[in-house]
Image 1 (cartoon, rainbow, N blue to C red):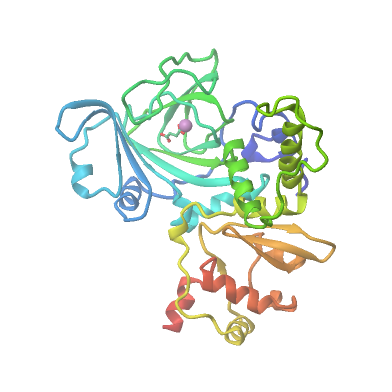
Image 2: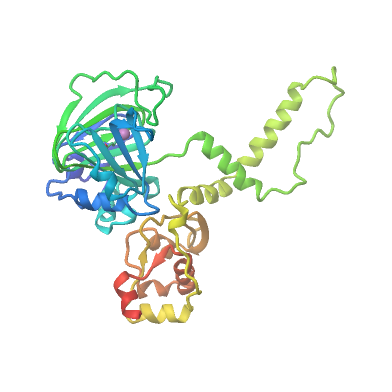
Length: 399
Ligand code: SIN
Ligand code: CO
């Protein structure tokens, strides 16, 4: 598929048009983006996930109560929840939000295929919300690009335009709700199942459930802040720099005032920092690791025993295949014409380029990949660290 092919999920825009005109720039409402969409989960199934240990879930009650039972507007509580929590909730004005449902539910992860017109390593997760009528999380701004896909019921979305980062928010609550929210003309829609709203970062929005069964999927894309990038890259570089590489003022002229930090000193330090950091090869190694860091490190479950490489190869030769563990992140970057670095869950591994490309795509991980030198031991290593897994049914067969 070329970048100019019209995509129904983008309302007939091509990937090139969407990226050129809307991505990171302006909102786009797409009616019928996923015309046959059926909600991948029921409200009960979502509530079930929110009761599980280790799954990030929040409950937002517009007219909640604090621990002492006193009224507390916009009360946020964090999971895991239990049945008693859901039993005490009123008939309206609350929202349940569950993060990273794509890590737990394969049919939700399958939806990501439709977003392949974006770099996969930009993805954060798919959050799913459920709300009875009136439920919302208040008018707010996110720093992420998000596609808000209506999965069931109706939600009214109102947009308030681009908002400065320091726009005032309501004091004393655990949500960042905007103090002022004014709906822009013509930016007020009720989304039906299959409709989708794209929002760039920094755009005020307010979504209120209009039905008993309102479920919304938020396909979120993250971008590192300058703050995180600088700190994290400097940390990465710090591990490789020799202690002997230092500020140096060999050949300096005598200072006019020994107490002054003069321009020459400042320039020497500026050069030391910029020259040290300006290393494209190291930047690539850091960037790949940073963008494939797992969202939840605990979710990577390493194997207790290392996989024998010949057994893994035999299993694949016999028709087996491996799967990318849901939530695992893969990316690659060329080193030269044939070699690449495969980035997996925060690590970087030297790899044949064809193998790296295949692993960082949706291609099947089967015996065909064994044609690449070193493939079996690389796959065994990825299995051992939990980034790849055998399909659940094959594991049962083995047991
Ligand atoms: C929701 O699904 O209720 C909120 C999503 C959002 O506004 O980011
Ligand atoms: Co939002």
